Length: 334
Ligand code: ATP
Image 1: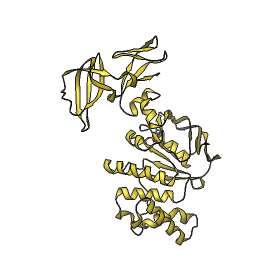
Image 2: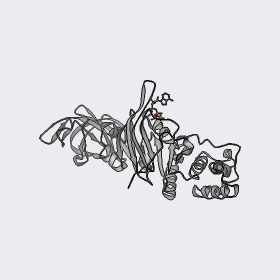
Image 3: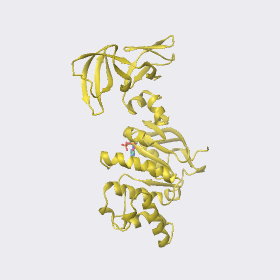
Image 4: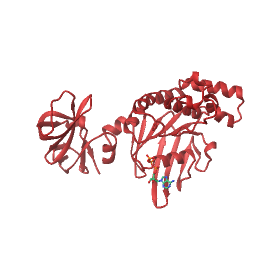
């Protein structure tokens, strides 16, 4: 399938600070892509370049095969949803949603009908006549989404769209966003620094660090087989061990594991550490998290993170024996 969006060798600096460094990315139609990375990694800069709010110093953006690099935001087949919603407070919800059509010269009767239909898609059919201040934060977010989708963009850009919502509403809106994206079939590109949000939403996750792409792919693959040490720690938790390789194995302070000769580290996910085994450890921290206990244990000079069943009786300072599920150990080259 030919890509809907092709980002080719994009670089951009602000003064002496390199915000994006030779970023290339291809995204298929109908995909839900999440740009994930810590603060300052370049996510918003990349989204702004996609939306046309910023021209890159180097590189090209192609959407549906057309070079959009120098095209104004309104001329591109994109629409953007910002974190602060940016609704017009004096306009009704219906008028807010229909605003993009008004700008395109669509007559009132048609834009009202289409705004109504779009409000139905986001579950707010009954709110057409209301004003933004009469809605909750989650509802306002859905209005912002409807307003962006009504112009039928090929790509919808979302910049931390759930950042202003509390955790419960955020999780609920994640489910809704994903369902709406499947319903309308538009490609979504969504910026967040929340790795749980990335895993919940993405068909394709792009992990960014210092203006570069560290890893990208299906979230299941990126979590289970991260390409770099940064990804292994940013997308979920891990214990990272350094080691030396010989004869197809890597030797670490907590055991030997199969590895290619260029391996330098392993990452161990906490759910792959179990009670019982040959690793003698002293518990240094226990955090009860409802569904499980997050335990840190010192073993052979290393702090090993384990996710143990919630009913495990374990106290700080106790000694315990642990094992590592070798087939799930992640071998890293950097
Ligand atoms: P956050 O999650 O905090 O929004 P981000 O990953 O979106 O971060 P960007 O906002 O793209 O990161 O910023 C990337 C780098 O570029 C940072 O070092 C930032 O300080 C710098 N930067 C971004 N915008 C500007 C600007 N307008 N002027 C100067 N520096 C900027």
